[in-house]
Amino acid sequence: MPTFTQTQLEAIAGALGDTPGGLTEGEIPALFEMAGIPDPDAGLDTRQRLFNAFADVQTTRNDRTHILAFICTAMRPERFARDPERFEAMRDSVNRALALAGLTVSVEGKLEAMRTASKLSEATRRARELRADLTYRDAHPEVMRFCQQELLADGYFLAVQEAIMGLADKIRRRTGLDGDGADLVDEAFAGAPPLLAINALTCEGLIGEQKGFAALLKGVFGLVQAPSEAEARPHWHMTREDAEDLLCLVSLIHRRLDTASTPQVM
View 1 (cartoon, one colour):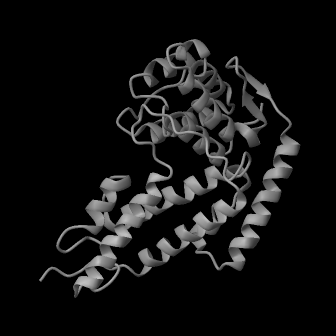
View 2 (spheres, rainbow, N blue to C red):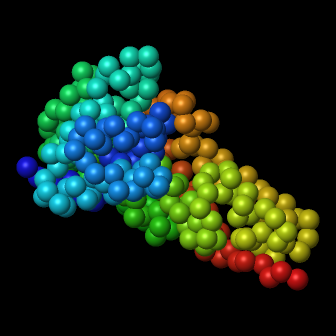
């Protein structure tokens, strides 16, 4: 039986644990136990906890049997009897992650094989076209790296989502913060002085630009984050044009972050 690649494992862990309506901390221990997977990282966030556990068990056993068992157990429809919409939202996210591994979760919650070749061909075409258009637009290198077949297997949304999440990662690296979304933006760009400034902040106009940039970041993060963990986000059937425009916006933000500085405390 083939093993999952690191990219596939990251996508599966994200789909199960880092999406609206995803697995909660309270659900994970029992699912690990039923699938025979050790849980050594209970203190980590859900996405990283799942990824570490999946990677460890796959490396130890040199197969993906226990990971498949975890997915089957987690996606049993009876677990969602009181919240069928949550099941459909999770199934959609998980199927995006499983697409290039040639697997899909059926409406009955069963893992089934799919036509990998045709899916790969479509994903390859999307990746090639998106990469070409973004190259023409001189997109930031941090954006170009998300033109991957794995992220484009079932459309463009996952690539855009990952690119936007990359902005949060960059802010955390620059500032040493560990937050996310609007809270991360406020911690990084508010304050007197802020941890990151996109200009000299020497007049009201420049201070207004700083505030506007922070508001833009919050809006961009809001595109891929649900208002609450319990609320499932409707599926966005994103066109290539939408994806390119959003990725170019992410590219612009990356360039402003590249030149941002930490003001000196007077």
